[in-house]
Image (cartoon, rainbow, N blue to C red):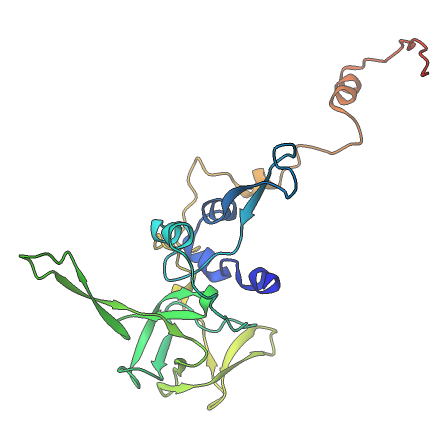
Length: 253
């Protein structure tokens, strides 16, 4: 269980890229710090801070209130098994075909990725009707919400040459580029440009440097050189102060 938590208990790479948030912020809002007293006599021993890294991931992201409610308020059920995937092959903007469910055979565009559970959400397909604000004198508001699909068994990529579903494989080109290749036709399936888009609808090409932004040259500038000296010794060397005092002899008994 500890190995499973280490492998699958972290936020996915593409989920972090889409969030466009610093890693330190994601770790701080997702891990709840608990005070744990050691066994024995806790009234005489120091308590240690233990971050809870066993998190339950769903369609709600760690920086949302629903994620906090699912992890810290609700009592979790069985730990969901997640099949490890070496090379993630589904990106935002990909056209996929559904293999199961009422929308079997239909094609749609990947709208969101939940890499921690091997899920993708396809725009307009595999929906579920939910009712909001239902009261005694009001029938409520009916909404269709897309449900996640498992990438290993429930969806497959579409070959852009003939718009048919196909299995894919990652291969290297002659130029050394790592690309997705259709096993049926042998054609390259390019990664959509929209996969680089973040939650604020920005891509690296659209970003314009502002006057208050820290430039690359300022970041790479070396302003501190580490030395095996204390702070006082470093100040003395810079100011030319020489220690000429002789310490008084003392004895240990």
